[in-house]
Image (cartoon, rainbow, N blue to C red; front, side):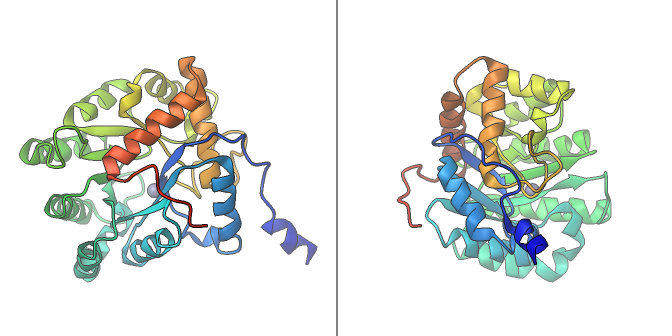
Amino acid sequence: MSKHKNRKKPLAPPPEPLPGVVDAHSHTWDSQFTDDHEEVLARAWATGLAAIVQVGCDLRTTLASRDIAATDARMYAAAGLHPHSASDLPAERDAIEAAVAGGDYVAIGETGLDFYRNLSSPEDQYAALLWQLDLARRHDLPVIIHSRDADEDCFEVLKEWAGRVGRYLGPDREIGMMHCFAGDLELAGRYMDLGFLISVPGPVTFPGNDRGQEVARSVPLDRMLVETDCPYLTPQPWRGRRNEPAYVAETARFVAGLRGIDATDVARQTAENAARLFGFSLDAPETS
Ligand SMILES: [Zn+2]
């Protein structure tokens, strides 16, 4: 009994508040949050988060993201089929598109290519990615891209697509985000040229992550997002434990340290970038 109670406690002290920061990529529909979802969200708001984007990975979690977002005006949802679930495209395509047509989503994804785990075949991953790029264009939504061990393959697909669709959301809006960007600064530059924002996750805080830290130090601040990808990719000092939206404050603070600027500036600018990409207002009234 006491063991169970301990499990429901916060796993570590919450981070220092950082008013206005946005978690651009979260999965609190995950079963790791079943027991304490309300407390997790309460900690996020207490930390000062201005918004959280809930991201779907298949039909079930696309609908769950929408349902969670509906509980608070500061949360938004994305509809997508993760590369791991790409083989479900024939079964889930119509229902995902119907959900998107309902108008409750701010983005398509996460989608992309993952040749590290290859849980779906490369052929299925390409098919799901191409379908979602087309879906985003048809519904005037940005895309959320997952790329793992597929840097150049993913870049080639997005380069062709971006060249074809242009800045379809308007001249001043990007067309997507590179979620949990793990490439080098050169690749980040090429993606920014295509119209993508570069999203920095928790592992930027890991000692020895020189490549990630170089990206976080050097990418123009008006092209950067910060995210948790919770429950995964937990930043220091909670590494090895469950991640949660509140911890995005620590990632933003670490980025500020790398750049020698104030954490509130990183929070404000990355929040403005998220609002611009996803087309939401940072003035959403509190509803909980
Ligand atoms: Zn994710």
